[in-house]
Image (cartoon, rainbow, N blue to C red; front, side, top):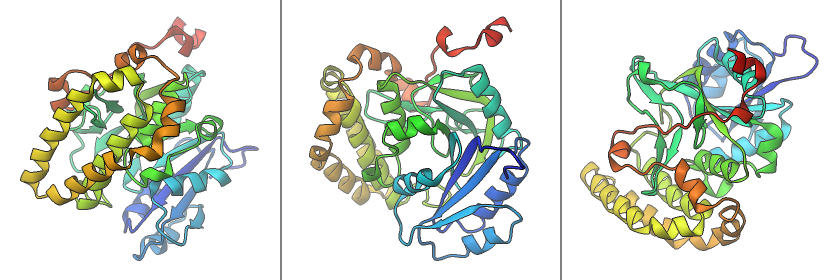
Length: 342
């Protein structure tokens, strides 16, 4: 897709695992992009369906990496990043379908905010185009991370603004920063690794900006299933890990009662939805395996003060229940002089 450019600006990385015809549809949308200076890398996690065969039928050029086994989302993205040629990495789910101006909106955003090292996309619910699937990841003091503005009306999507983290269903990271942060934490396997990465970027002094006009249509757990045992287990286990791994000590201790309350409320929800067994295993492994993150915690949690992180987290239980997003004003250092003039 480079169309003769001397160097590749964006490497689009897609991790595939039995995505069926979703992968081919994803590629069709990339073929329609207005901005053309990009490459596509697909990592296949040992799929047993016809998703790669269907992708090969499309007139879209891509590099295929056969992982040979199911590495998980985190490790597969890291594998592809090693061979990427782009200055920016765009992580895209196979069930995320980019609008034609998706990459153009990113390029325009990057020019407006040249000091920013990561960007998030506006996700529209593919089955209900008038609803949002998410507009930036939020981390709450209840130990629950989620996609902000989930199921809100599309007109409510926020203007360009800093967020806690970019949802990796459609996220952009500058490659050198992604490498400096160590990429996605492969222990997470799948779910929560994007919030963990954005958290580490925030702690290291970086910023993530959610782009209003960079739009994809997203099925949301179209492959794994939103309420499957797999999603429930990995989602809840990993939220415990990422909060412990990154949160400054004072804030971590202060919010312990709130996290326990969150655990109890989610336990009730799991019991009512038939996911109790998966949830119970997630809690057991989440808290029982924290020791593996002690060294990480010493490094990352000490980088910023509890007060700094507390300002970036969501505190309101009502906002949490409403899946409200959390954005903050853009700092002048992130904006070009040309953008200020406008």
